[in-house]
Amino acid sequence: MMNTNGLLQSKSDANIDLENRGYKYGDALFETLKVVNGKIFFWEDHYFRLMASMRILRMDIPMNFTMEFLEEELLKTVEANNLLKATVRVRLNIDRGEGGKYLPLEETNINYNITVEAHHQPFYGNLPYEDYIVDLYKDFYMAPGFLSGLKSNNKTLQVIGSIYASENQLNNCLVLNTNKSVIEALNGNLFLVKGDVIKTPPLDDGCLKGVMRKQIIDLLKNNPNYKFEETSISPFELQKADELFITNVIVGIQSIGKYRKKTFANNVAVDLIKLLNAKLRLT
Image 1 (cartoon, helix red, strand yellow):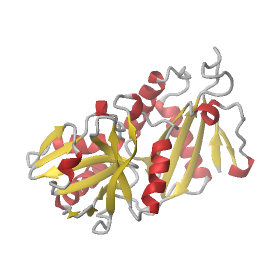
Image 2: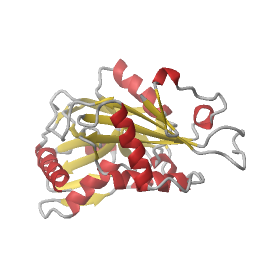
Image 3: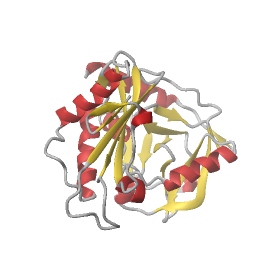
Image 4: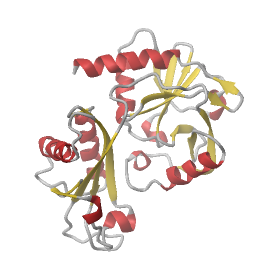
């Protein structure tokens, strides 16, 4: 079952208007959420990121789009799929409705739809990483700036980058911006560890404003064992690093095992996973 503007229906019964702006122009945003036993992880951060992104795209936010309303719709959809006592991956999609060309019609209806699928991992674990291999994706580059950091439906680079990774027996690729700085992985934010210093690219380099990125930064800023820097990362730094790891809300932290001829440890990642799970149990 999926939720289209509050209507629960089977996926086979759901139809998308060919004039839908999300379909025609990618004029849409989405949030990927993790729900465990009816609890949405980091819901407040997801909600405020979504509202900020809608404002940047000049979408008229409906009056009923409160945090409480959308949370209720999300959990209603989870319950309709008999997954309220399970671990679930949820996608909340927002589009600007139908009509117009590049310029939307003066009056458009903001649509939302919600889909869910079962997920196997309730809390964040120490995932296998020794054979998790990445390389740079250099066919196309992201433009620096905040538009690149929106979680919009325009994910062409990530799609063809994922095809490239599959064709080259890679688990993931690292993305560069037009300044040739490393900004993220195809499916999450990137952190680099060298000694007690942990770096992640700044948002104005063009990386995603990730919800899990925010959680990890909060943990690092309050941890006396590490020095945190939000700064650009050059490709030359990757092979000098002690650790590299990728973050997103579904897997939490995925350590990288190999980049070209360099292999990495994952000691810091293991420490942060423990702190992250402790934070979740306290909230």
